[in-house]
Every structure is written in structure tokens, then in C-alpha cells.
Image (tube, rainbow, N blue to C red):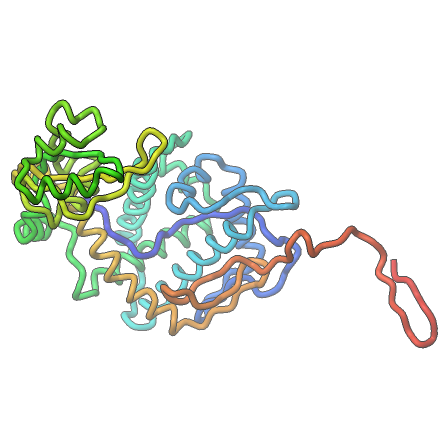
Length: 364
């Protein structure tokens, strides 16, 4: 089984050089400081190593487009990297202070494997085609950068293991979760109907009068599946469409279209989209395991997000203003993109003229 830990800190994000003229505070979190030169070195390697850049973008697809200057990146990309560095440093400092956690060689090896797996999974999920492996991407980092990312991953893994609300990533825990959520791992067969807006009331009236799913689809649907009575196939936990089908049919009884339809674009127009579950069959754990793992990871990440926000509220954070601005979002403290003037507010380059009561003098 592929054992992946659902981390609430993505230990790696990226940006290339932004605002390289500022040489002040860098990034400081609760007594741990990342110098501006080190920060820029980390950004520079992501800018130049395309495989690393590809894996970084898979983890967080913010804009990594070039900025206005040479060897620069958009403010969004710069702040994304600064934000994740702050999170990693904050969690690392937290577990050291509250649990006296110091990673062993074994925990660092596990963290390295976890980081590689996380990056590989991200690339696969986004269907990116990187030029190398996640291991090669990590190896491309400067030693200090690589060490920091692995240590941050180790700290995150340890912290998650201490949370009473999280679910362990092992076979026994996944099987227990599967058993208590059997209805979430059913293979679902569905029928659909794509109905023109003008026909929706008639469709709903016919269903209320007792028309079957097949009859409704043949009578009202403009989709090609109408000739099959709306039959659109069966979707199990290994299907890429399973999550969507499960969500769309979660509260709908068998062989019944929901009262309120979804909306779908079809042939250049907007149509009502009705989805009816026609059969549900429980999928064996061996076949549903990947879906169970994804659900447990998401559940753990949701619970851990609150803990991360609490840690960040308590952390003392200072950011070089050219890298980002520390502030409060609806989800908690975060790094915002650096404040930059609008292009319309920036005039052409010219001499600065200072006027004084003694006369005018020009500084060039």
C-alpha cells in the first residue's frame, strides 16, 4: 500500500527572484531566520531547474510567470514561496518548543520519502509531464534548501501524529474508516437527462406524475444517452469521475431524478442536468483503498488546517517587504503578495528636481 501522510504544510512551493534589490530582514519566524541571500538562492534554483520547477508548480499552481525585471517572478509566486517557508519554519519551531522534537536519521529518511511521494502524487493528479523524477527534483536543491524542506516535512509528520483527531495512515485504520463509511464506497450506476430550460417544469411534472427515469430521459433529454433511457454507466472508487458522481447523487433515492437539477453547458447553451442513481453496489476494500486513502488524507488535512492556523497566530513573523506582506486572510494568517504600484501610476524615468527657497537644484 502506498502510505502517504496528509500534510497541512506542503513542504515545497516555489518562486523565482522577486525584488532582489532589498537586503534587509529576509524571513524570520519565532527566532528562526532565513537570510535574504539564502531565500533568493532557493528561488533562483527553482527558476533555472525545469524539473524542480515542474514539481513545485504541481504542488501549488500559482503564477510563476516572469516579472517585469530580469530573473524575476510575479508577486504572487514570490509570496507563495514566502508563505510556505513561514509555515514550515513556524511548525518546526513549534514542535521543538512544545514537544522537544528533534528529527532522527530515521525520521528524516521517512520525511524524504514522504516528500518525494507527495510531489509525485501532485504531478500525477495534475497530469503534468516533468522531465525527471521527484527524487531528482529534490536532489537539484542546494544542500541547505534540501535539508530545510526535509526537516519541515519531518516536523509536519510528527505534529500530525500528535493530533488526537487525525486518522493514522495504516491498513488497519483505513479498513476501519472504510467499514464505518461503506455508503461512500459504492459503485454507482447512473442515468442522466439534459433538459432545455423551457422543458424543466414539464419534466418535473411528469416525474411527479410517476414517469420512470428511462421514460423521462427518452422524452425530455437532448443528450445522446436519451436513446438508452439516460443510462450513462457505472462509476466505482477507481474512476476519475467517482467523486463527482458520489457528490451529485449523495441525497438522491434510487431510480429518481432530483427535484433541483444541476447546470451544464451543452451545444453552446445552458441546460438543466438531472442525475439519477439507478444502482449502488458496495466496492470491496481492496478496490476502494485508493479512494479511502484520499478521503482520510482530506479529513486529516481539514482538521490539521485549524492547528496550523493556531500555530501561525502565535508565531512572531517578519517578512522582507519585497518578498511579501504578513496579514490575516479568512483562513488565518498568511503572506500576501508584495505591494507594488500599478503600471498606470508609474511615470517615465527622469531626473528628480528638488525645489527650495534658495532656488532650484537638480539631482542626477
